[in-house]
Image 1: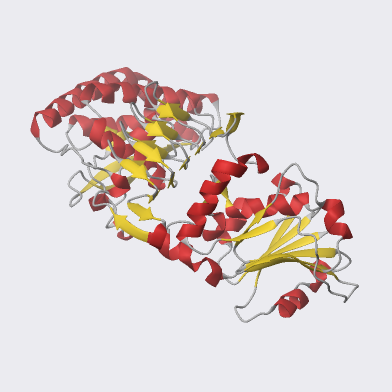
Image 2 (image 1 turned 90 degrees about the vertical axis):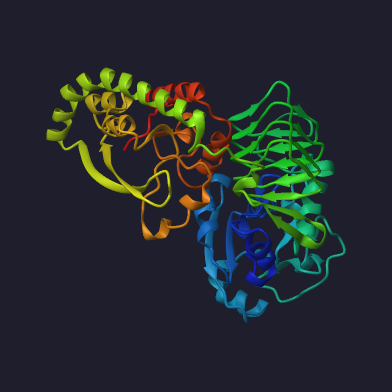
Amino acid sequence: MKTLLTIRENSYAWVTSALQGLAPLLLPICNKPFVEFLVDFAVLAGSREIRLLSDGPLQEVEQYCEDGSRWGVQMSYAHIKESDDHQTIFEKNRRFCNDSKVMVIDGFVFVGYDKKNDYRDLFNSMPDGTVASCTTGSIRLFTVSESNMANNDETPVSLTPIDSVESYYDLSMHILRHESSRYVLPGYGSEPDSYVGRNVTISKSAEIIKPVSIGNNVQILAGSVIGPDAVIGSNVIIDRKSRITESIVLDNTYIGEELDVEHKMANRNTLISPQGAVSIAMEDPHLLTGIKDTARGIGNLLRTIVHTLTAIVLILLLVIPFILITPILAVQGKWKSSRKTCYDHTCKGVISLPDVSIERSGPLSAIAFALSLDRLPTLFRVVGGKLSLIGNAPIAAEEKNLSPPAATPGYRPAVFSYAEAENWPVGGSDAAIVERFYAIHSNPLQDIGLTMKSLINRFHDTTTA
């Protein structure tokens, strides 16, 4: 059997307007992308070829699903017109459908199934016609060689519309509370009703009340209470003494200190009430409840002194290896140096910085990278007071980046970034969460420890460049 997934753009327009920044077809349901539930069900029904059809953009979902090999299927993608009816779609994909029974899942709907069931024999024996339907979609069976259609009395699966923020929230809570065992949910489920992803740090004084689903790269700080009925996405920080109850925290979100989120959805800097989709945009990005002014006062002076002294020590340690190794790498073409213009700490001026890349294709270049010799030129800018030792990754002063620095509280361009120290993704909004968190909580002594972590992480970095 083969499967056609037909999802029209107007059926998920509410995602684009209410949950900005999310790819609708990758909408996470208990931390699992929506499209992956459909693929899982198609596999259980016996499909080995799946085609996703839409009149909207498919690039992000295609990048995620690729060719479908991770599920043991062949996935393909095709565009349809908004005006195409079912018969037109079927005719356009007749070559795909030839010589096979075809299951068509139509609409932005959630298919309720049970992973313990094998639907292959059942679906192969069912006559053509509608298997299940709801107000916004349906599942139908077609056999190319036959024209007889019938309504099936037996309904082995259910369909739930996902047509609003409220229906999405209710579906997520229902699965978490009652049906998590029916699906393959991401994370480690060593305990019932508890799914925890990779690289999750939970303070000893934090409390986790099941059922919960927690994504990857999550920090839950002291005194926080998570659950019951909490879905925490990936790349999330829950600050001290915060409480998340009967709520969904989407990816790339920072929950500020002592913030209670109950019966809500948090999406970056926006709190959403599912009933009525009422949203409140927080003044500080990533739900920050407050932020220190790091550019003034005694604390900043002490930070500058500590950063400068530490940079001098690092320069003294690295200068001899730098003199011995870099000329050889330069001759080999493995040491490439240029300059880049970045915003300074005021977000109004710019600073010219060395930009060094090392081609790690041999032992000498690997040593140079592990010792962070590429960062030595920028350490002198710390001594000169133009950079911090650790803080934000410098933001390039390009036209496309005219607004982000001003929207980044506590922005401090630095030699090493907090995201590097914490082994989080260094680019994009993931890094911004960590950097904004430390804009509130960091202190000079902690900065030294995090700098050491950045240096140590370079030793364990096995990627090539």
